[in-house]
Image (cartoon, rainbow, N blue to C red; front, side):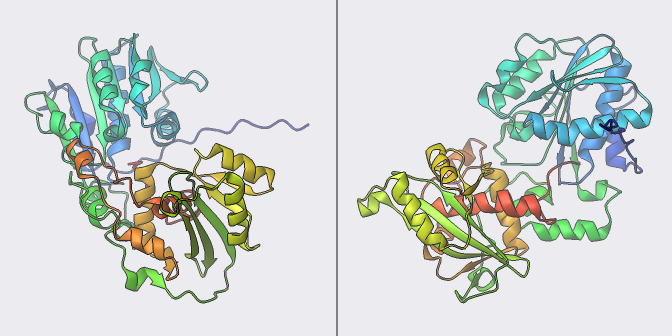
Length: 423
């Protein structure tokens, strides 16, 4: 048997740094107006050069200032942290010729005499993983997506003399704790706040910047392009326009089909049949059964019979809410190809908004419940006052089904996928 060669780590290909990136690189050094500050927060637009310059700054600071200490590197999840931070960090270390040992199973890096522990911060109890650790500093990627309890615990763990906190994020609600407790109190809490725009990433061409600007609208444009901390108010899909997004329900030459499903027993059960034609995904038809309104609760077997009739032999590929475990088991037993939906709500909403803005999706006019929900799917004002972005959970079952499809199929396969905050 031929031996598989170990893949060689690529070196990071550096581009010239902008003035804003240089400020982030040098904020902690002697002579900087921020050298005595405890925290740096780099926020602003996507693809603006925040993450790479922060990684470089954090590595140089921790290696120059400390020996034999522990550090925290945190992301929304371990998976996103490895993609967005650790992979480019290893390429940077390779380019610099710095020796390191990466223990993937135990989630830590040994660089020089220091140890860097990796953490995911996607749940309220994620703070528990930090208990007992004494750290000399931390790097928090996408910090606005962390629970406040994790941020508080992370800051509390950094108790070594001279410790500093490095945080980056895209803006969220103006009531978010990162904004109200740190950025708005930057003088009191010795926070160095650096706001980035896409112009601060010199590697981006004007053509690429224009493409990103076209991908977002409404609150997502204000946050991810303009870099503003603004409220998500009113209609969630304010860019939805019946003249642009709704088409007649006549036959088309669809190349492939999928069905999306938001599962409900007491709540409504929603199916959507999606067909691909000419690079656009059309929601061809919908199924909607509200057990409460009709005073008729159905079993999994009855819903399965409805699904078979709904699919009409066109496809056996279906995207299902991952919490619908009993229905998923039944579908698999019946020979259906089931994908568990990627059900992150905010990522999904952003991706649907991008698909609408770039006209990757359209809706046949027979989808009456879907069109009705577009006009009533709104942000939760009470949640906004707590700094959280959440939709009101009512009249949203077709919206959830559509979000599962866009997030799981279109944005996993299409080159125009919504942008993650890598830079």
